[in-house]
Amino acid sequence: MRIVLVLLLASIVGSLGYYALSKVNWFQRHLNWAVIIVMFLIAFIVGFVGSFTLGLIDPNITDEELQGVSLLILWIAQFPVFGWMLAQKNRRLWNLLWLITPVGWLILLCLENRSEQKGLEATIKKEKHEIGATESTEEEYRHSVWEIYRKEWETANREKRLELNKRMSRWQELMKSGLSASQAYIKVMEEEGETPRLAPVEKKTEDIQELQDNPSWLLKQALRAFDKKHYRYSSWLCWLRIRRNPNDYFALCQYAQSLYHSGKANDRKAASLYKRAIGVKPEHPLAHAGLGLIHHDNALKIYREYSMFPGGDWLMFADEKSPEDEGKFSLITSYADSQVGNRKVAVKELEEAANLTSDKDEKVQWLDMAAEIHCIIGSEDGITAYKKILSISPDYVRAHYYLAGCYAATGKRELALQEYKFITEHAPEVTTDLESELARFNLKINR
Image 1 (spheres, rainbow, N blue to C red):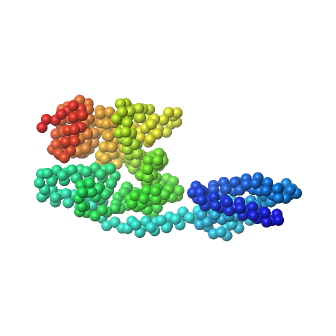
Image 2: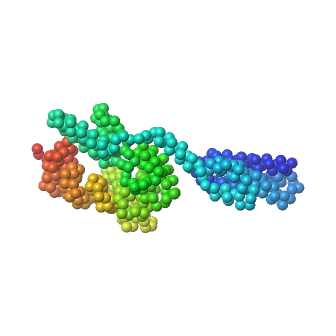
Image 3: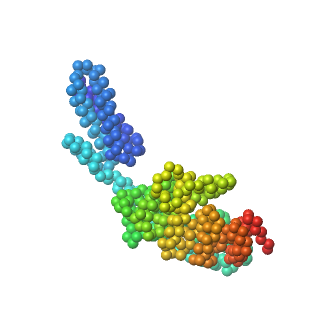
């Protein structure tokens, strides 16, 4: 009778443990901890509920017998629990024989999880089918767009040329926001309600960001997944890569970038990964630019949301930490810091990235983003920032456009008019917008 009860209780307890493990997602992600927690729960159930039940059924049972029966139930119940763990780790069930030995449970906990590689191979096979090979490079696609623009320009009248200028400005603006040349072109044509004359192509892995000469296979797949907007899958591949090599700079950057694109809830973790990458390779611009971009985008969002209220943006940015104090403990955290939108950090990291890169276009792009934040801090800061951009690229239209606004905001009417004249000559399609901007500061243009 006692043997039947022991086997019955062991089966019930083991089945409950197996059911809990198979239904709770957290257990499936943390296999070893799951087994330890469930075994403690089983020990609790056996120690109290089982002993109480056996005591009611057989009042003559001694304490020593109760202890022995409880240990036997616990030993039997561990088999389905560890069997579940072995199945999750893609291991054979004969490993359960280790439980016969005194430290067998410890050996099972130390077994390597092979299911990650199996799941990776299955997912990669699917990705390879979806992605395919790319025939055109990013540079070739840009050249094709410009060739279409040139041919249309040669035969267009004045009104059509203005439309073409506006289209190309919009195309370049979308590329600066992070879209590929093909994605930006398709979007512009859709906005205008016209049919694209070029088919969309995807960037090659090497065009997404700079890589070391021999990147790992995992990182290559992560970049391709990112280009397909499979951000969670990309971050998972990077996580696997970082587990193998914690100091892989490009894997850390790609992991942070994938998390950032997965949603705002991941901004803080993405920022911490960029900081970690900077610690690995501080002389490379990629991590500086990524960290600056996160703070830049969130700072602009805070400013746009709260500047409509008098003093609202000042309050949100009050007490934001300086970059030197960012890692120090503070009892008070500003709203901007809590939202990963620190203006000072954005400016510092973007300007550092610009100083480290040798590519002129990237330098101008990152200084332009830093200048936007300078304008939030103050118009005088914005003037200095945009002048720096023009010293590198004198014909950069955006710098002239916003410099005119900064001059108008600080009462420098003549200088604002000089910038306005440049815009009318080099980008007439945005002249009306600039006139509206200058009118906000009581600077009216008489044509």
